Length: 425
Ligand SMILES: *Cc1c(COP(=O)(O)O)cnc(C)c1O
Image (cartoon, rainbow, N blue to C red):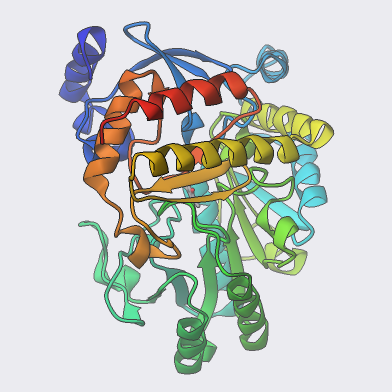
C-alpha cells in the first residue's frame, strides 16, 4: 500500500525510531502492510501523506468520539493554550474535570489525573496493594491494561495460571503475583478466591473487553466479581480507558449497574490529548500521596491544555447525549456488514456495543480469548488491505475495536458497505 511519500516517510522513520513507530501496532505488522503517515484529519476522515482520504474507524484508538479537529474543542484548547501550556501548579480546570467525572460515575468520588491509561492502571494497582496490604492481582487473559510490567502477562493454558511475563525485560518476580484467568469465566474466579482469598489485593477487568476485539461479558460475570471482591475485601478495578464515555456518559458501570471500587479512564476524557485518570471511593483514594502514603506523581499531570480538551469533550457529550444515535448507526452498519458477508458466504461474527464493534473472521460466538483467536487473521489482513485501498481505515489488527464518531453518517456507511461488496477475501 505504502506508495510514494508514505513509503519514503516510513523508511526515514525506521532510521531513527525503533520499527519506525512510537507504538507497535501502528507498524501494520499483523496485517502484513506498510503504515500510512497522516497529514491531517477532519470529522470522520483522515488524509495521508499522499493526500489520500480515508473514512476513519479507528479514531486514534477511541478518543475521537466527536470526530477529528472538532471546532468547539479546538476553540477551547486555543483559549487555554494562549494563556500558557504547563505550570506544574494546580489550576481550577483540574477540579472542573474531576467534578465532571465524579458526577458522571457514581462509584467515583475522587479522581487523580495522570497522562496516560497506562499510568492510570499503574496508579490503581499500587493503590489497591497499598490499601489492602496484599500483593496478588487477578487479571483476565486477553484484557490489556497498558504496558505496566506486572500487567504484561500473556495467556497460559489451563484455568489458573500464575503469570509468566510476555515481554523480555519484565522480571518473573514482577508478574508472580498476577493471577491469570479466562475472561467471562465466573467459576475460575470463584476458584481463585478459594485458593488465594486473603492474598488478593484486586481484580482488574475491562468490563467490556476491547483489546481482544470487542467482547461483552455475561452480566453475571461482572456481578460475581463485585460480590467476591466485597466478600473478600479485595478491590474491584474497572479499566474503562476505552469504555468510559464511549458507550454511555458514565461508562459500562452506568449502563450495567455494577459499581467498581476504582476506575481507570483515559482516551475520550482527553479529547485527543494525552491523559489518564484513576478514580474511586474517597476512602481508597485518600490513601494516595500527599493525603495518604501511597506515592504517585507526574510533572505534566493535569496539564491545562489536555484537561481543557477533556472538559470540552465531556460537555458536548453530556449536553448532546449522542449515545442513542451512535448506537443506532453502529447497529445499522454492523447489520449491513453481516448481510454483505453472508451473501459472500464468509464466516464471521460481529460483537457490538454502542459505537464500538469488532468483525471477527470466525463463525463464533466470540466470548473470550480462546474463541477470539480462532479468527482467520490472514483473512483479516486481506480485508484490512483492500479496505485501506478503498479509502477506509480500520484498526490494523483483528483483535481491536472499531469506533464510530458523531461525525460518521449514512454517507460513510454506504461507502463502507459498497467497499465490502467489492472485497475478494
Ligand atoms: C488504551 C488502553 C490502556 C492504555 O492506555 P494508554 O493511554 O495507551 O497508556 C489501558 N487500558 C485499556 C483498556 C486500554 O484500552
